[in-house]
Length: 411
Image (cartoon, rainbow, N blue to C red; front, side, top):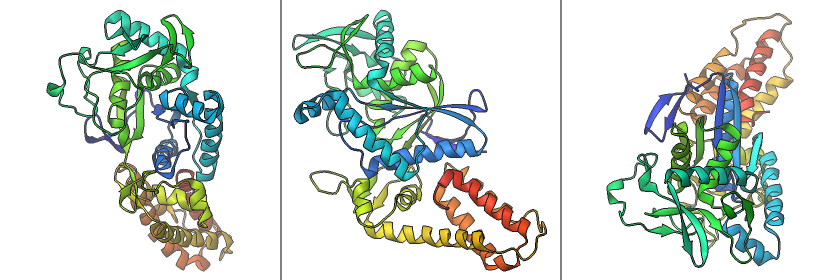
């Protein structure tokens, strides 16, 4: 049985969806005011592996992903470039989904812009205002709406905050996001009232725009409902972001939003966090310019425990790519091998490939263990390839193709 590490409980638990074989899965997407870098794609790839492996096991996955197109940073960047927010987001989304194709990432059927869920955000906020979880407050002449974390009894349960340190006197945080990773201990903004040169929508709660802090809750509940099976994102989403999403959704519905929460580890470069000031932010185009392929970059980014920090260097990328190329060579040889006979042979030939793969993948998506395990057995099969019957070759190649529906790097 598949076991996944649940951030909510801090335990590895057997995965069982609420309504098998259907799985509802929500994943954070990009902030489209800028290009996504390869560290971002590490998160999107672990989510891709999760979806593909669930489908490998026979589940039917309905996945939604948020595209953050309207936020403080997008408005400022669009003004800087002399573009509309829609033009800026459209340009960066095209690059983003082009990289999805390059890296073999399956595009979610519901890739929803925040601007496409303003109606749901307004509806959620109306209910939060009615129940007292949210309130209006004028700041710099603009009437905004804020959420009261202390009103929600389970606030902080996802990131396991010590709420005894939370200030009892109201403090308000007015921006969508703040630099760094410390917690903003206070009431957070969920609706920006209209201001000069701002993006503004007419809604029943007034004119304005949804803050980043409510956008994921709006997109998830609009597309998947108030109860889902899995919510995912990078480990940085644990600070401020995901506890906000959980609190908003559960304050409205009164029911658990997501049973499983999964978070992927950071990608470092030469042992340091990626930073523009350090000049170590890499994009897919930088990797391609060094002669590597999208398949090789995909493999590098998935060939590790998704929850652990992964260090990127071009030397490590080269080493891991050689490992992949060697296995791809074995697969190609088997494809070109003429069977020793046309008989069925041993019907169990190749079954150990899938068994090794599944044993490791069922252990919290251990892609590295899965790849190393089946590639060892593949090497043994390769050694006796000239003695294999037609049926045996077919079984081996069929098994590899099925594995590759998840890994997307063998053929």
